[in-house]
Length: 543
Image 1: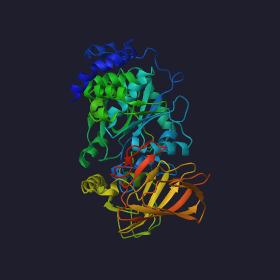
Image 2: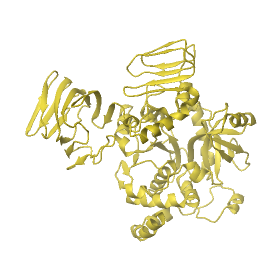
Image 3: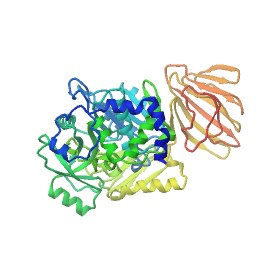
């Protein structure tokens, strides 16, 4: 199928100058200090070089933040529509916010963010909350792993004449030592300027079975402190992990990279041309604005699902390792989250309304209800409004399989919390019965819901705080605190917050059918043509 797409569209790309553009911007201009001996051993490929060598003070490094993950191993706290990177798991701010804030220093450009299109409003809100900036948000219709995401970003940069060093970072990792990160970046820059592809490796100081490993070897042609990647090792069992730590020269794979955009594209084209070709087509067909790029869904769907590691780093001769001893954790499971949090005298981590008795090394996360734990060791207990998960700390890697099982059963608890976030605010399910549903709705200042109607339900709105502007058919009026109104079945209506503080209302729905797919949108300022609700088909009349 891919070959057919490429052949069918080759003429289109040539006409629009895409191939010509890439060829001109990625033309060879020299060896940039790369060993001629190594070049002799390379297969004949087009050399992509930047005409102006990278200089840290002159051209900032461009961070690329990958924020498309679902964080299923941290269910039920992390869910598909609100994954772990947007949660405050290790401090006051979210992992996404922490990632961006640690990159605010001289020599670092504002980031490019790659995320799922359903998360774009969450991204913008979390940027705004911390007064953070991004230069572009690239939106995926669905995940295709890290290689396509980075390829599309690199192609966009090269196409714009910005063949700079790309610092690729996941949005959901923890780094405790900012200075150590900057020292590692300085060393990595020297290697990346020479055309190397840098992977930041965390020294394996203890036997971890949840991480991939990298075996390194010395290479005299690399800068001092940088080693060559000899082998990638999948997550080992306990015995092999112990051997890796004892032997030395092994690193945990952090999933953090530094390379020049054109270098990555050169290696990708050589080792995984299917991804390369599909990404060229996807970018050409995508919707571009000054602040965003929305990937073309039909073309992106043909892109192979593969990681940077498998597609490029395990195959290239240019992969090297820079040690990163900065208190790194991928916070990939409940056990790793326990490890990075403060503990009581018995090694327990607790959050929320939690009482622990005669228990050790447990993690207990409450979210409203009182959670009491008695006589447990190494147990994880996570409570949310609609789900509870209890697991032994040594078995938390099985949470992902549990999520898969729940998805196969069609359970909605893997997709959204009871509190569902929208670009205008959020709503929380309070109670539900056969013919009624009660919601708590919060609308941000200046925001409004879509102009809509329902065929099977009526709604009662009660203002708890703030001011509501209500549209009901031809009538537009204001409601203040403690006032209410009735929205009949089939009435065209809208709710808006004209005030300066959040609008809080209680909505009581009643009728024969209360599903979220009983909605027709006539106007929506957020341009939602597809639903964000779980499994919902929303009919959009007009945008």
